[in-house]
Length: 303
Image 1 (tube, helix red, strand yellow):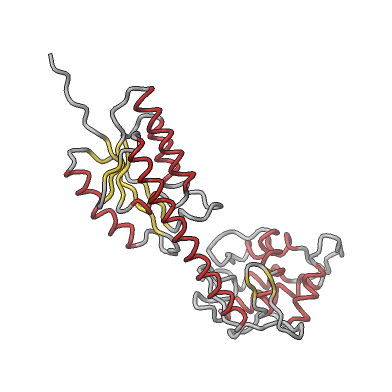
Image 2 (cartoon, helix red, strand yellow):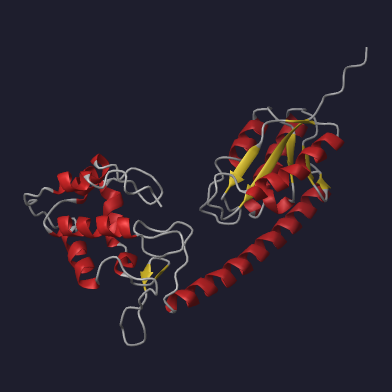
């Protein structure tokens, strides 16, 4: 009796970097190519594995929604491989490729599972074969080098712009609109908060006031003492241009100021930083702040 042929289970994968949308349109464009690719090869698709707003190049980024769960599922024999629009959607770091090669060889040679597949719109690679591995390593090395050069050009551009007082951000801080301009409602809240901190209220206390008033973070989250401290320690709140966490100064040692304005003046910002320093432990003064902030309930919608 002839055993029925194993129907390959192949995982559709999509990834895109630098998107502030819940699901970027680019993901769907990739998958419109991936699904027919799986069908043409006589396989069945598993669930989708998606990394939205995730870089495959940056080493500190964990692709915990798509790539990592897929690799775990492959090792657990829940899928026989992956299909993507292009190799660089899956790999831009050699270490990730080596992890997949190891998992594929373990599954095929030691566990005697069907030959794992790696399909893209332009190629099919056998990652259990030395020739296929060599080609993949070359392509990933090229993609990695390209990403490195692009990252340097991008970094140089944003640094130069920052020295002109022009700041770009995918996730603007509380008090600013997506284009970097001042959000007047949040600016008023931040300035009132600065006065409370100068009067001795601790960041945890201010966070509690804001939570009770329904005021959220810039991304719609819940305020904590740590979040309040980060907001007020950031030189950007004083209109100072910041690049990679560094407050920029000109040749004369003066701060370079943002062109889109400040939420606090520098003197106030410095006072607040001193007040929220862990060594500062003033007793909070009596304040009707909690009642005043209730008037702002719902005013901040995490713009």
